[in-house]
Amino acid sequence: MSTIEKASDKLISKIGALMEPPPALITPIEPLSNDKAVIDSPLNNRPPAKEDDSTALVLNKERMRTLGLLLPDMGNTRIAEQYRKIKHPLLRKINSRTGDSRHNLIMITSSLEGEGKSYSSVNLAVSIAMELDHTALLIDIDAKKNSVSSLLGISADPGLTDYLSSPDIDISDIIYSTDIAKLKIIPAGDSALANAEAITSEKMKLFLAEISARYPDRVVILDTPPLMLSAIAKALAYMADQVVMVVEAEKTSISIVEEASQYLEKDRFAGFILNKTNLASSSENLYGSYE
Image (cartoon, rainbow, N blue to C red):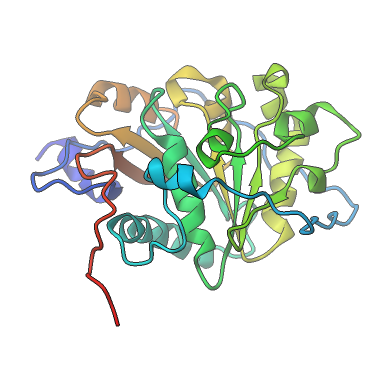
């Protein structure tokens, strides 16, 4: 049995299951560098600022449906069931590590562009927001693409890069409620302010620590740039508690995935999402209708 076959249990879920076996998957390889980000910085002594729920962003539901994104009213559809399979092992680990620093930070990444990481990040966040015992905070850390806002059809300012570059912007200023209950968003912010130094700064580490600790029921989803194309993603791979890699089915080569996986620690690696199979956009009801 090959190393790839032995790692098949690391597949969280296929998005649109094929009848034939999925492409081979790989185990994460130990990082090449020992230069890990220091993430155990203490929180600021000030109490966390209250988030403003008075004005919720209205998501473009029609656009989301057209793009095949998950919505709360899709309770028995194939896509809803697939993301239940993805979120449950992630939530189990979060629940087992309550009290640990950054235990609820989940990073979604990919090897290359165009594999569907932002699509998966949005769907996972919506699925978690549908939980009775959890809320979801989706953070777009890929300011050059700003994919989360594009997928949801929203425009919000300021965002993460603005917060990191300005002493006058509070965390509460960049957290936006939405018209999906229990789903909040931090947009990417001004792309001109995006740089690896800001993401690896002490302010970013304190930001992640505070966001993680602010509410005990919150799950934080970090939509990051691809590992092979960004120093930002490589740094964040050591800050999140769980890392999920999205792999485009039948396109991304095993060698590319192997190379990208070198930046993931085994203890942080949660698994792969095999995306863009031929049933990925199906809205077919999985169980039929209920009376």
